[in-house]
Image: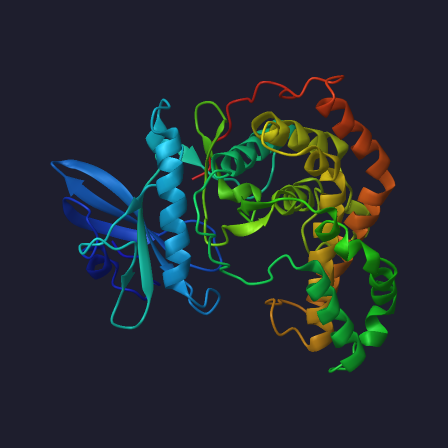
Length: 384
């Protein structure tokens, strides 16, 4: 049955795609906050088969047609690269064409839809449970970048222009501080001072002359599907923000999202720590799959990337707080300020351990410390 809260006619949408069999049911699926996602079930010669149908949020992604051009090119390229691998159909997203051969369907209300084959016997996790899981996620993202390193021209579209333009993000913070539109600067004096002291950080990756790559740009744990039986990270999902960028944007965001056990809006800052075993696992996994395409400069700046991306999102939270909470949804008073504080505390934690982080990266790239899995991944507890 359709989920009672669903507001779209998924049955009608499903008919627009080249999906064989009879539509049986659909229900909302996953924990995403941007797109509307449904799992649709079809009867195919007496056997139920599942598919993913997604409505693209065109308020966030202003040009869904260009976004889907990116997705189509990326999934086609990945499909060709892994075609001869065992279980290839579960190691990359398979986009299903519309009845008229297009990558997406635009309904009568102007909504853009896409369809994928459902990846069975695998799940995503919202919270990292172990260094082994962090290793598998980083390995999957590194492999994703490596497989796309030879994507032919033309350049992919920028689905969110300037997404990781850290100097531009910092300039927006300076503007928000100067305007103090809702008289909140006095509440964030310490955070403003913290940010202004680190302005030079914002250009350090851009000034390193690193090569442009195809990057995912949303490397949270829950954008990797883990095999139910082995715990292996088998497939990277959520390709909406795949676009040109620096490889280290992705690694840096992994460090930001995975190394601290605290929630993003944790008020008790003593809980915000940079867990070194998690960083080790991320670095091992990422380099195991990506070492042979990454440059020496990219490897050398991996720890810096974690600090930079954490600082960048912290400045975005702070700027939004000062502007009156215009972008990020809030659920309590000073919510964006709390989010900023957790990010800035993590920046401090990374700074405290940065030399050790750099030494570890150097040790596994020069061969003195084997770049291997921390341990064989255990079988996970399945979460539906």
